[in-house]
Image 1 (cartoon, rainbow, N blue to C red):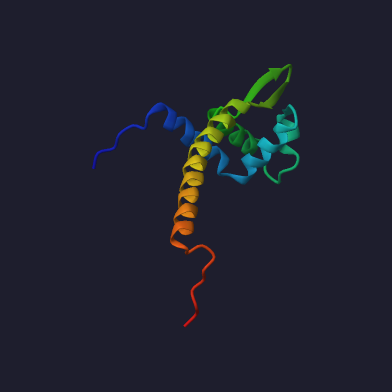
Image 2 (cartoon, rainbow, N blue to C red):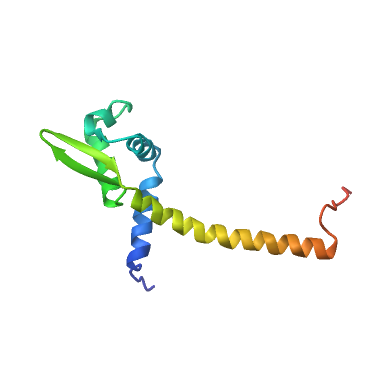
Length: 122
């Protein structure tokens, strides 16, 4: 079995989607999308410890979804929308594919007269 390293853009997308796979991280992102927040503010809505939230933040930061800046004794967290744009572009490519595929299917159904016909139950 040969394992090859994924090209860099693929690794970035893998980190992005892995970070978005967790509901807690998505909730953290939703919160920072409304504005900058401290780690303490991000911890309060969850029934998990601050170290657990910090681990989530580390994954979000590794995926480049957030930016953390030290402000005195606090760390402020803000959204980095550029990473989300990369994911949206990736989905956009597939949306184009499916839009074209459904358009072709519509044309095929119209030319064959199969559109709107239903099978009879036996």
